[in-house]
Length: 134
Image (cartoon, rainbow, N blue to C red; front, side):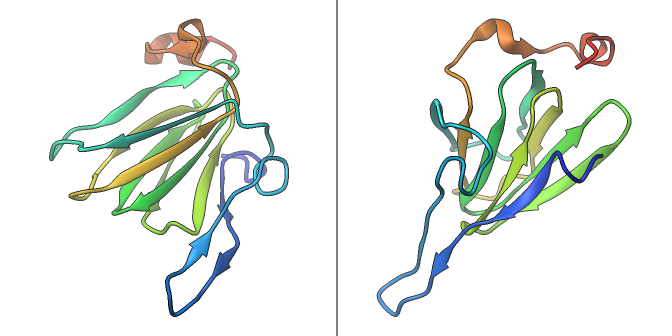
């Protein structure tokens, strides 16, 4: 998988006895304008999320609490990224198949997206993904 594409991006972190702080800014820390924010939580044990690719949408995924794995597939290579800290996230460009699993109890995934929710942007069929030209 091209290292210039999907990758872990470290975020600023300020350590303080009162509690730590991290943040993310569009175009400074992530390479897109944030058009949508959503979160995944209360995932039952053994369940998976994702199972799709986007034609246009790009995402930045952060484990705000707990841990989970993100499996990315560009049609040639599959890579697993374990997310378990709130001061870094995974940049996922368009045209990459993604799955999320191994959610810990009380995990919270925050996803920043480059496009508003658009159902036609999703590719849910893996065979279609492989032939889509991404």
